[in-house]
Length: 179
Image 1 (cartoon, rainbow, N blue to C red):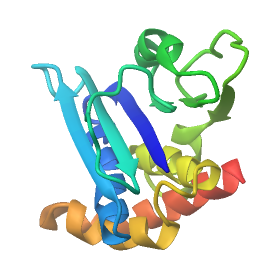
Image 2: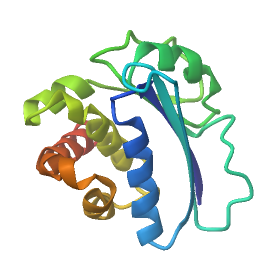
Image 3: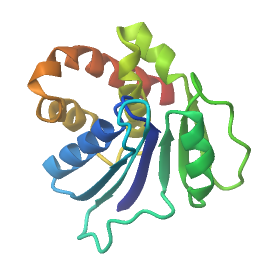
Image 4: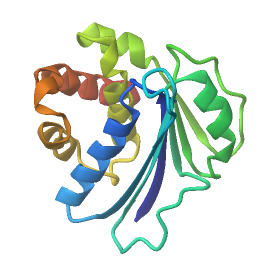
């Protein structure tokens, strides 16, 4: 199993954290991972994306030109990266902030109202966790739900760990929405 995932959105939406969580969880399950973060100079409000590769075998290249999964949390990311999803792939888009993407044959499109679901559990800032929960429901081989939950305490800085209860609820809400 090898899965290539691309997370994209505005800086401040937790794009890099979502990618880091997948990597930590997959590593704890004995999988090989790569993680390449990228963000604009503006940081919060600028662009942010990261590519993640999770595999049962060594990874030959960390580059993800045509991801098997795209999580797009904003419209510019959906427009820019949506066409790159390979046939047989999965496109998870934040229907709270994005217009529906154009139909493409051969890929699964999943609308997740990430911001609304995150607000329902305590904070719109957990929209990234909602989207990540949806990914885990649709691609369980990437990492186990329990492993991602456990990785939260390692991935989130000490000053923000008080938000992990909301993060856990948001993960569950996204998982349920995609099941």
